Image 1 (tube, rainbow, N blue to C red):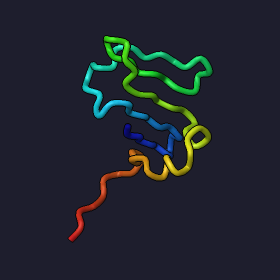
Image 2 (image 1 turned 90 degrees about the vertical axis):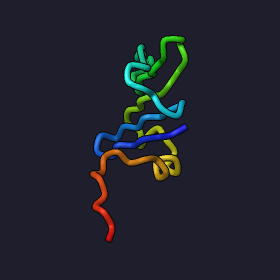
Image 3 (image 1 turned 180 degrees about the horizontal axis):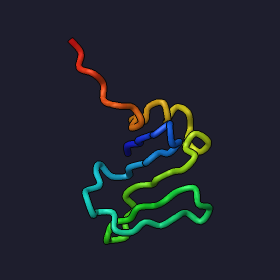
Image 4 (image 1 turned 90 degrees about the horizontal axis):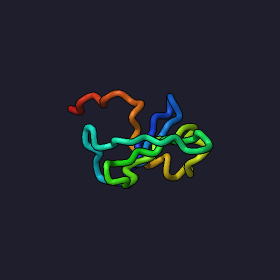
Length: 78
């Protein structure tokens, strides 16, 4: 499992598989309470979860270890 987090949008993506290739997620299903979108493959397997208002829904320890996608690339070190 891998988690990406965008603090500026307060959204997280939880990967339940190592990678999701282009076109692999063929069905997106909104959660009944509209807090997330579930991504499924063509066999009905859950690949990942896009989570809205992530700060309220995920444990702070998980968010602190998530890969941050809202930051630009780091400058090269010398």
